[in-house]
Image 1 (cartoon, rainbow, N blue to C red):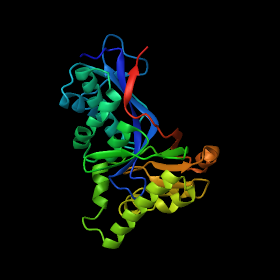
Image 2 (image 1 turned 30 degrees about the vertical axis):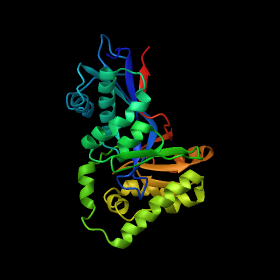
Image 3 (image 1 turned 120 degrees about the vertical axis):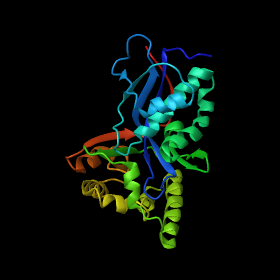
Length: 283
């Protein structure tokens, strides 16, 4: 069944790792990438897609056919899952073109494996597919039930970070004590989020594997993280490989946290996206 060109897909941004959950934890955020098939005039705010765009590769890999347009509020190379969202969008659009829109919400889990293969790790794509806070491992992804309804305040500088290059800061061998620390803190973080134990989140988002090593190369991000923790944030972490910093807080304190962050970056107050990849009907 062919998909009507009056439909597109919408995929949320994501913040990966959440501190200790390296390559496993992700959180979908309320910034979006829309992708659709060109049929006459382009939708408002969209543009014809660059052949180098990661959505193109994903769309073609899944057997998609046709010219695409894209509209995105997700900054590239900032640690908010742009490439993951684009790849999920390309795969999803090809699925819709091939199989139609019926039961897409149930079938979208099938996007995890090809999206992970393209992205190289499942944390961002798992969150972008399902929405919410997710844990991904072994080719599977599970969404965490949460009792909290927080705001996520993100500080986005004007510099970019290469995920591939930032991984070189992580040593090939990790002390057992650090491995145990991260396993324990990842478990603590999942339990605290599920139980709504906000007092435990600051400790639960600490990390001994990647974050301090990456922050050493981006002192502005370290200053932003410290500023968030010095205000009303429950916790804060380097978003993915950075340089964006994300902070979680109550809705009432979001403005206070935002004002505490350094002025040399763009600040967004975002909700956790709970819908994940979905069909977008065009007017």
